Amino acid sequence: MSSNKGAEVRPELTAALSGDEFSRWYWTLAELTVLARELGVPRGGGKAVLTERLRAALDGGAAPAEPPRRRSASRQLAAPVDGFTVIPEGQRCSQVLREYFRREIGAGFHFDASMRAFVGEGAGRTLADAVAHWHATRETAARPQEISPQFELNRFLRNWHAEHPAGTRAEALVAWRAHRGRHRDPATGAMGSAGAQAPHQRSVDVSGPGDTAPGS
Image 1 (cartoon, rainbow, N blue to C red):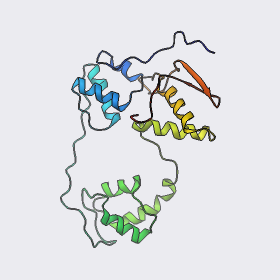
Image 2: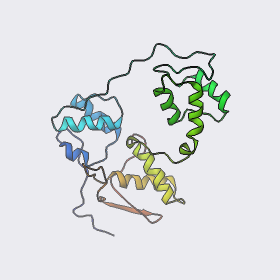
Image 3: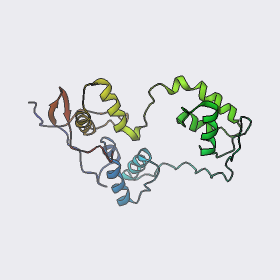
Image 4: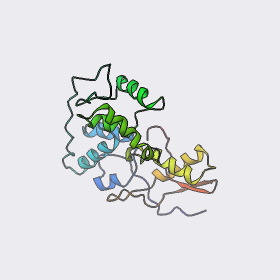
């Protein structure tokens, strides 16, 4: 059994941390929310945005500027629509559009990230253009998509199961606890060396403080 002397231990998340020390460790959204409430930092905008706000607050600096909120459009498309219908500014992925696309494309249609972006940013384009966009992006959509950093648990589990196809979810979560217990490089976000070693599971080395998957 390996010695754990000198292994770094994740500090308590308090207002006494510096921004750099804060950035070296993984924190759950629940932990970040508690600290944000204590510091009076706005809690909206997602985990990645909240993390940047807290780092700035811990260093005594100004929080990153929030992007301007888009005004919701007062006009949404209503049935009937056809291929010549122009997408208005602020159009949502509505039931009207879903029904149209299913008629034109088939029952397999769904609003994936590519189609949501086209509808949200495609003001002035037609619904026929949207149908063409769907067909043109199917090869790309079939590839594994990059997961946002704020969904780090999902990305970790996907990669772990790809490397350990015979592994169980319980084993993957043990490995996740090891992963999240490692400190990060504040400049790159890369994980550093592991902390205390936990028992092996299917020859997978694990380490780090306990945690549960929910609240990640």
